[in-house]
Length: 212
Figure 1 (cartoon, rainbow, N blue to C red):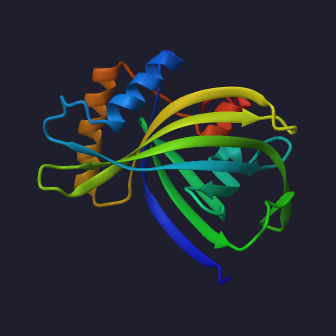
Figure 2 (tube, rainbow, N blue to C red):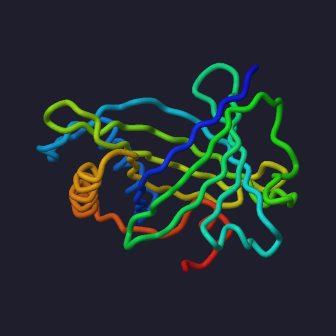
């Protein structure tokens, strides 16, 4: 199988919930488009499962600089597909600007180390995420960004559950005018569902890395 590379730049905003029950209600509400968002239509896209293996130095030097290195096993029915990802994130206000390189690779399982800058980074944490992907369209029917509704579980080396958390992520990789739409929409759902912005990635939440 031939490997392929995808490069992507964009913006994302993350929100967390008051409690797990609130998260489950909001996921259901967004997936089924309960209304109240007059200028937007929500369309369920797909449900996927990610098993992400993250790598870093023992002192988490890369993660604390906003650099993420991982292998992702993705399942959406059928055999798993693997991706090797290098991602850099910069926080601007409540929004992350990201630059991502992702390789679709032909492997049977994730490796023990991640090669970057001449270093072999060890595996530091594994996170399993159940993701609902929802497309947000304007009144002209154009998709302007996506909502990711994530239930993530941090796994111990033996596969046992260490901790669980929920989050909503708004993501887009289009023109600046779409960022304005995303900002307006983010304020709308933040007020509607009493959400709180969070400035941490999943790996930072899993390892309790303090915000910079």
